[in-house]
Length: 219
Image (cartoon, rainbow, N blue to C red; front, side, top):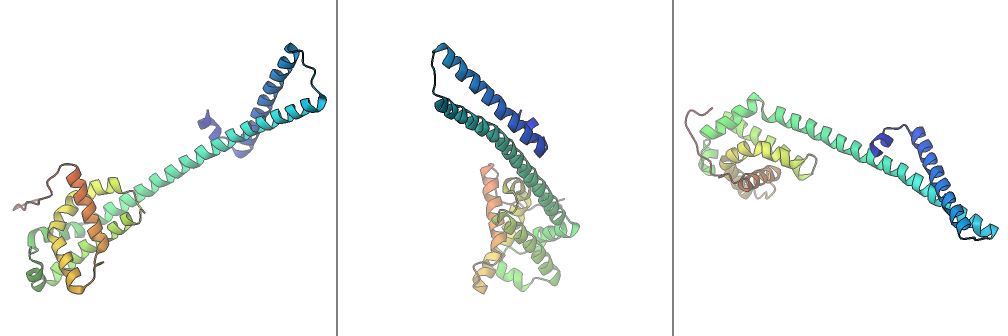
C-alpha cells in the first residue's frame, strides 16, 4: 500500500490523507455514539464536543502520519537509487582508469622488471620505469583517497581490485616505505598505502595467501 501511495502526486497524497482522516473520524464518532447509547450515558454538550475534537485531532494525526510515512519511504528509495547510480558511475570510472592499456602495461613492467631492493632499484630506474611506477602509484593513491573519504562504496571495489593491488604492492610497497623514510614524509602516498592495506586484509579474510609468486611468460 505504501508503495502505491508514494507514487501519488502531492495533491493526491494530500487528498488521500484528508480522506483517511475523515474515515477515522467517522469510525471514532460512531464508536462513541454506540458506547453512549448502550451505556445510557447523557454526556454534557461541552464534554462531548471536547471528545469529538480529540477524535478529530487523532484522525488528522493518523492521516498526516500516513502521508509523512509515504514521503519518508519515497525519500529513502530515492536516496538508495542515487547512491547506487553514484557507485556504478564510480565503478565504471575506476574500471576505465585501472584497465587502460597504459595502466596494465605499467603494472606488467613492475611485475617483470622492478628490483625487490628499493635502494638499488631507484638508482638503476630508467625514465620509462619511473613513469610506470608513478602512474600505478598515482592511480592507487586516487582510489585510496576516494575510499578514505567514503566517496564510494568500498566492499565491492576492494574485492575487485585486491588481486592486482596486492600483487603489485608486494613490489611497490617497499619503495613507498623507503621513500617515506628517506624524505621524512610519513604521509607519502598515504592513500595508496591505505588501499593496499585494505586489499591485503580482504584477501586474507577470504583465505587467500598474499604471498606473490612470480612466473615466467605470464599473461
